[in-house]
Image (cartoon, rainbow, N blue to C red):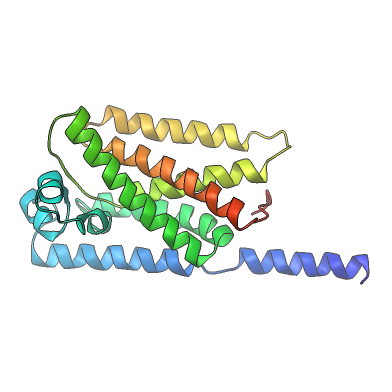
Amino acid sequence: MSDKLRTEMGLNMREEQQNKIPGITIILVIINVLVYAYVEWNGSSYDTEYMIKMGALWEPLILEGHEYYRLITHFFLHFGFEHLVNNMISLLVLGYAVEQVLGKVRYIILYFLSGILAGVTSIVYNVVVGNEYTVSCGASGAIYGLTGALLMLLILGNKGRRTSEVPRYLLFIGLSLYSGMVDTSIDNAAHIGGLITGFVICLIMTRKKRMEVSYES
């Protein structure tokens, strides 16, 4: 095979990868929007008691009532339209990048595990450290899992290169977490739990599958 043909094939494969539609990400966005519409149709997403009824994270019902399904349902619920829009924009941007590299199956596993463990982190922090119960919901814990995964992919893609990509991305993450610390209404424990989960799971996935991550990815 000639070098020219190899080059053309490589370019075509790269273009094909970049043009892939992030199907799982789009489905997740649609589900979140439909759930929000259903919640608003039957009540108000600003009503705390109603959101608990809909499946929000509420420690007593999980620890004492054993309603573990809330560890999943909570990251499909949102407090208000602005909360939904902000998370869905982040999901589209981060999901597009991560899904292309990991593939649909590994991507959905990472998303759900990040959301679940973000909820677990929130419970542990609020009950053990904060010594209080809080109502929490939103896709941000799972989305921070994508943030952690993208950080791992950037590290792998920039291995052996001198670049400002990783430091700039770390700065972005730091500022995001800082804003969560300043705003007491934000469940920053869930964000940190999701971030660490996504980072570690992505590391495991890329090593186990021996994925070749390029900077262009």
